[in-house]
Image (cartoon, rainbow, N blue to C red; front, side, top):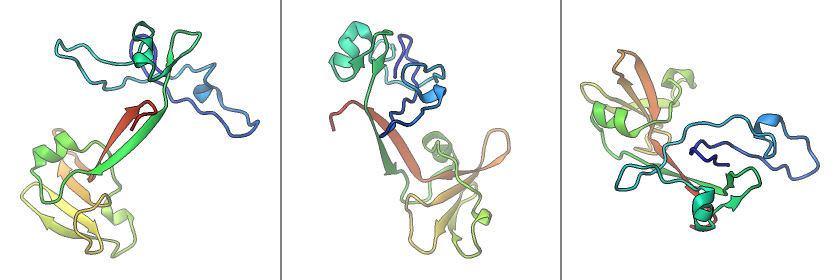
Length: 157
């Protein structure tokens, strides 16, 4: 569900006559979050609004002037070799558990550079389960998954 200013919210529709808690109920939604919309050549964010028929009909216009959209999450692998620290911090956004959290032997160091450690599950090489260890700009060690998630709006592929 997308508001006039581009804030978005998750809406759930139960399969049966189940009760939906208020913060995911389509009629009583109050929890909206900022969303990184693509931008046009001028720098304005592009998102479905009632002014453009909710993305030229991609989404449904509701009575409260919001757009209700179907979404599809597309996940893809990001790296297939040791990246730089800056590349990890720029491209990866999904956190991972520290490899020591898992059972002994689940994760091993695959390779490392001066400022990036690469952990993989078994000896499978670079996969979506690969974890990168880097130190961020606050000098904190963080762990990130080797995955990028993109949310596509609408019923089209």
